[in-house]
Image 1 (cartoon, rainbow, N blue to C red):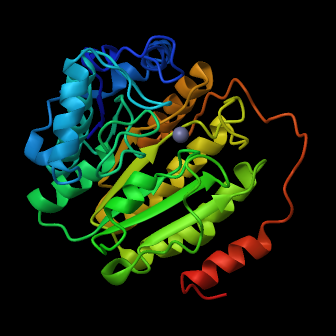
Image 2 (cartoon, protein in one colour; image 1 turned 90 degrees about the vertical axis):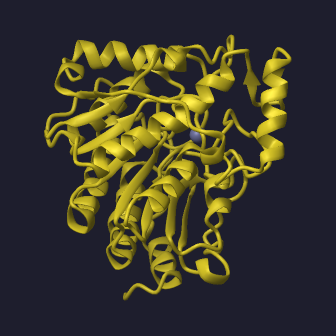
Image 3 (cartoon, protein in one colour; image 1 turned 60 degrees about the vertical axis):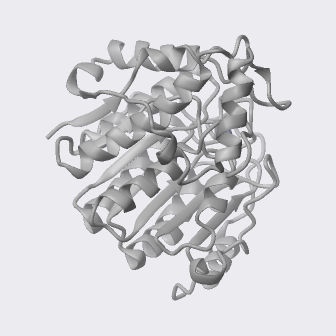
Length: 345
Ligand SMILES: [Zn+2]
C-alpha cells in the first residue's frame, strides 16, 4: 500500500495577498515533491467540502454563519492575524473535508498512511472564533469525524507546530476519547499550553503540553518525543493517530525561536510512525498547519513523506543551525513532565 496525499487547487484560492500564510507555501511544497520525485510515488486522495454538520461538531453554528457572511461580504482582515478572500469559504470547507477523506482512505486501507496538504491551517480556530490564520479546526473536525464514523474509541493528536494548538486543546479538554499532545515554544503566541494544563473532568490526564524554551532544537524535541510522547501514547493505545504538522519550528523559520532541523522533523515523524505501527496498524494521517520559510517547509514536508513511505534517506539542504545559545540540560524538565503524567522515573 502506498502513502496518500491530499492536494487541491482550491487551497491556492484562499488568497491572503502578501500574508505570511500565503498560497506560495503549497506551491513550494509541490515544486520540491516533484523535483525529488516523491510525488510520483504517492497516491492522490481527492478532496471534498466538509458539510456544515461536520464543521458544527467543533464550531458553533453562529460562528459558522458569521464567517460565511463576512467572506460573502468580500472578506478582508477578520482580526489582526487572519485574512479572508471570496474563495476562503470553499477552501476552508475543503481543508477539513480533504483531511476527512485522508482519514477515510487510511481507515479503509486504501492507503497505508496519508498527509493532507491543506490550507487554511486549523489548530488555533476555537469553537466560536477564527484565530491565528485558522478558520476551521481541521484536525478537531477530523477526529470527531473518525470517532463518529468508525468503530474506534481513542484518537491521538500530535501537534509539533511551533505554536500551541489552543483550539484543538479546547475542543477535547474534557474528553478522554482524544489525547492531545503538543510541543510548542513557550511563552509564545497564543500564550496557552502550560505543562499544568492537563485536561479537566473526564479529560483529566488526556492533554499533554510540552512547553519548549526558546532556542530548543532537535535534542530537546527528541527527548520530549521519546521520553514523554512515546510512553504516554503507548499507555493510551490510540486507534488512530492524527498529526498537526507545522514546520514553523524550523531554525530557518523567522516566526519562532526554535531550532529544529529538517532531519529533526524526519526523526519526529519516525517516532510518530513507530507509535502508530505499534498501536494501530499504522493508521496515521498528517495535516499541514504552519511553516513559513518556504524552502525549509517544502524540504521538511518532503522528509516527512520519505518517513511515511518507510524510506530512510532525507534531503536536508540546511543542516544544523549556527549555534548562538543552547538551553540548559533538559533533564529536569523531562523529569517534571514524566512525573506530571504518571510515568515511572
Ligand atoms: Zn504555527
